[in-house]
Image 1 (cartoon, rainbow, N blue to C red):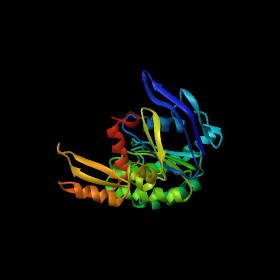
Image 2 (image 1 turned 180 degrees about the vertical axis):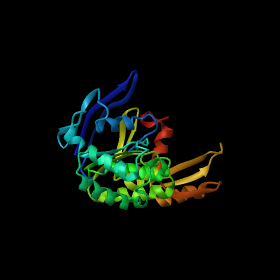
Image 3 (image 1 turned 90 degrees about the vertical axis):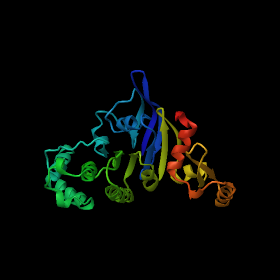
Image 4 (image 1 turned 120 degrees about the vertical axis):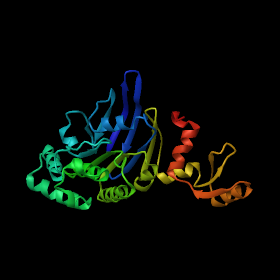
Length: 282
């Protein structure tokens, strides 16, 4: 289990993380959602030992995470939001380099590389230099590198940004498989539907503070599981949320403009809190 207690981090006059405390149980697939500048990446960098908190503690199964926590870092894999492959190395050479960083033996590196490249559909390009790969292939390779040593914890910072829908779905399927195998996964993403499809728990963060936590279904239930969408007088689309389908249908029938009755989504939760400024969202 991961336990974060009262984490703070400032950069000059900017408070990036402001007193965050949370527990992530083993086997959880957690989504961390918030607008740009909310503190998601800073929080993740502290949890993976890449950045030290000003105050507060981070424990992995009771062991503290800090820059010198070698044993703890051996248990985690990290995929950053920026491409960090060695572009002059081939796919399999990138994998070998990652394995050597974790002091894996040659046979173990080869076996793990074969398994991961096969699962991620990269076997046919294993001898291509990484700079020649498509965006989706590069993202898949970054995830494969993070998993080369079979970590218990996987941290993914916007792992599917900028790739096509087919590659994104392939990565979703692979991450679901990793979750079923028992890995604890923390995901940050701007693709709200990604969190709804993958995560069994979601935290909403802004201004460095976590202000909502629940399952995707629980967060949707808060605003109402059904919505009526229609064009307002200002020509902007408006949404009204309801606790039951009959209520939503009754509201739709009362409107004299074209409208739709639809299930609410996690994206609706995001925009609902954004429009109301909850947690500082504007």
